[in-house]
Image 1 (tube, rainbow, N blue to C red):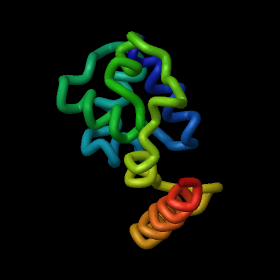
Image 2: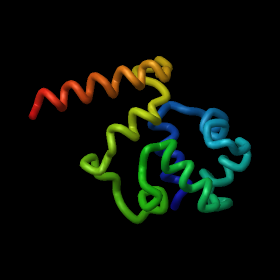
Image 3: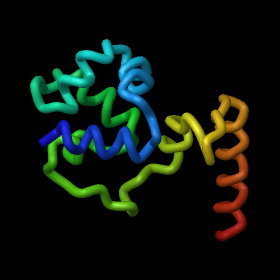
Length: 108
């Protein structure tokens, strides 16, 4: 069920329900209802959740396991909120992309 997946992803990122709900633009109580399988998110919220956790909507719905080969690094960097417990700034994201692009260019 979607609630189990949401709880797993939230706990994996060391976020509280409050932090997650705020990032998604919803009330904590609404998010709690999703995690406890009392309600299901509408399509717009489902897409926000997928983007926030950097997974597909199919994964949230239990239709496909995440495949590390399917992770788009550019999108993951855009959605990075923290690294090793420290906040990631917009400047940090730009630097990560520049470093990754330089690394990939060197592999050609």
